[in-house]
Length: 303
Image 1: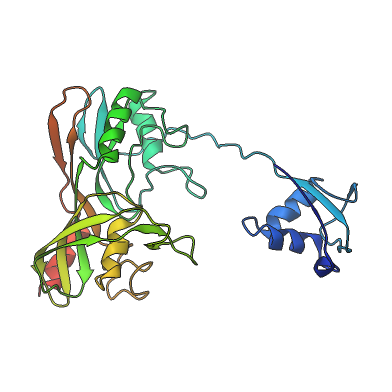
Image 2: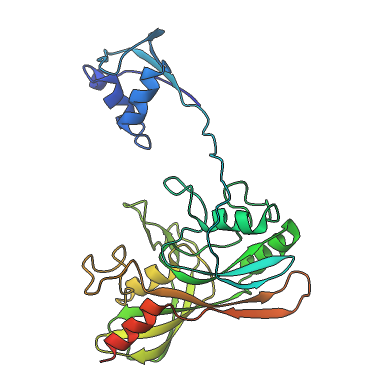
């Protein structure tokens, strides 16, 4: 990517690395320092150093090399396989496992494990970073997730996701008790207008999001809930529950920063996943038992 700009009077006297990071906030100052060191930033057709100070009307040109996707390698990571055939593999994902590689998480992911287990039998629709992955659940959410071994199966399940025909039931522990036994949250979700790492109820730029919930058990200041997704937006249950003053226990992003219990992220478990099998055309439903930490916490909260 090639960029070019002319320094203004306001830029006068600024270090070039500081000016670049200010004008292009999506990149860090250290990123531009490396770019300058590599000779990829030119001022008035000359190479410069990071401490170069701009003058008004300086012509600055730089190029950002195309990002190269890292090699995603198979890793012999044990998988809790619920079901597997020639088309799909259904996994009970543990807490702390990232689903697919991303900056900062290029190994130890579900994809690395699937590549080792399935060899070359994974769909390629979502590219080299997400082979086989049709949908995802958060790193600290446990439970059922399905991956596809070929593109035909991938397309079939992706279409079911698109029309909201897949059954997805979660169990959660949330703060506070409910007056009603059941309810529906219908509120669009999009990027948080200020904190771009978070999602939020966003009526202007969000996408439709619907969560059905029902009370399983009321405890001392907490509620054990079943949540069924009608849609599947990023962080949907976490955002929706927080929006009605029932954030998930352990969720320090959308709930209280201080958690009264020692937890690794939100108490959320993908308990049930149901869909039409891409080959047999029969409805199949898969369940994952509550993880130990979740069951022990329920006992503790119910005392």
